[in-house]
Image (tube, rainbow, N blue to C red; front, side, top):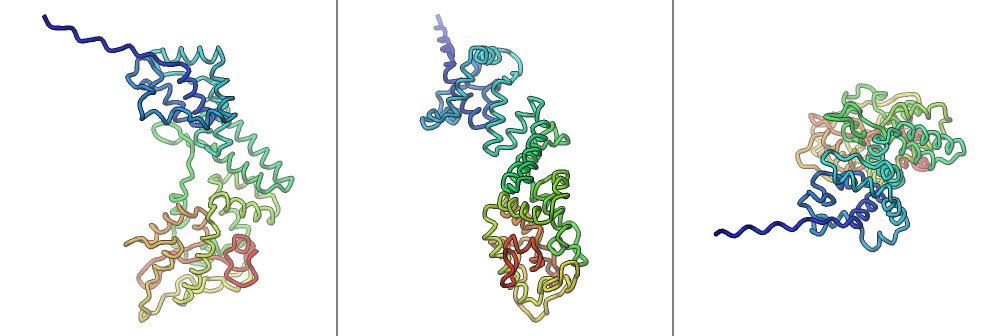
Length: 366
């Protein structure tokens, strides 16, 4: 007589482990891990073959340092509340998609916002149906900070508010908007500049500020809120915003000034140099003499900080936008001989150029 196969040991989930995993996700503002714990294949479910004890789920559990963190302990206290714990247990037993507990979603969203995890914050606030109200409140606080001449606070508020934006046209379902500077940079430079005014960096200060703020805030409507403010406030706001988007901006500023000198070697002095703001001089189509054998692509390679093998101007532009999101505002497409490159373009006497450290004329850097 054949022996019966032994019954597999019934899985028992330690609710305290589940509580700590949820508290970790909440305290870290991690919307993805939070949702994973309610997934049908979650190790928190008794009917799932997955287990917390396996190494692949170790990242879901807090370490000793996190368990000592006050925010983790605060989150754990919320999870351990009788009503919250009962709700979680019921959702993990239910044979249907889980309904995430709002008692945990709100602190998760707040922690994500505090930590700058705007995608997680946007998704959690959207589920709670308060994302729009949170954006309005952040804008209100940011404007109040600017009214009090707190530029850094204003920039933080605007970045947070625009970070909660949602893309309702996303497929297959609405998703948080993302900072896709590579795509936006290509849109900025979609048309070849025919005149100096077509180059963003050579535009008069008001137009440059409008374009730069709209591009870096990822939201023209948010940039329009700043339009009534004095020019010096908007220039200071842009300086702080550039530092926020690109902590390594000073390194690019050095390479930009060096690239200007390299462009001079090709007889391609940046258009508008020495001209008063509002006037345009120079040309964007100055071609290198055929007898000069230097490679003009080294200019855009220097701007990026490395050479890309067999790359076109648009590939350098995407790399530049990835490494230094504000940089595409200060370059332009340039045909040199039969090669199209990216060349540095800015007015050395512009307040924007000076405050961002891009001016190559002595004594003009802010």
